[in-house]
Image (tube, rainbow, N blue to C red; front, side, top):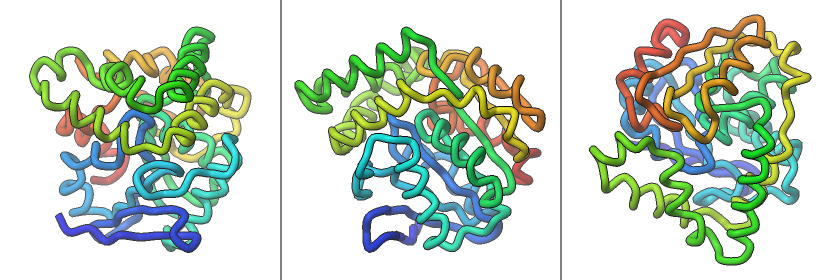
Length: 262
């Protein structure tokens, strides 16, 4: 599929765009890049103008100056402005991108019309927070290669890996392309994030999707968002891991069809 390459802030933030119609914006996971949407992109681009952000420090976008949620949100808001994304946009975020999308929707509800979260959390458990910090420390010592395989195995369910063994190497290569400092910053943001007290403020219509076998952001964390957001609806995809658009593209498209108007 032919993609238009975009940049904002004099090249600081990169994105790619395909299709025409209502804006559909994608924030990718920490463990995947925007190419994880390849299997669903043709269907989305038939209906929407899809803009896939490369998050700060990922595959061409420069790292944010500080490892703080506010620094990321400011960079992403600049992208919304310079990419001329309309205020009725549908914002989709997976994993780390889902945490950013949730925070973006809470703080900038005027920027979007609907929100789709996948494998996201408003706050992680103490064990998960320690795991994110430990991962950041490993990257500080040995670079992304030190965590690439373990992170890839967390991102993909065992059943999917058994059927698609080549996916492990593809995921590892995507991870190795991330700026190590940006990966550590993302881990820090995930370890410190606590959006639970703000969930009641979210009034944007919200669809929360979770793979039943997601070990990074287990279903209980997604259900917490859906339970505390008045406008939210929850869908769980059986047998799926952290990245449903990659592992189960048809299930994912079916899950968003009615909500997004696909």
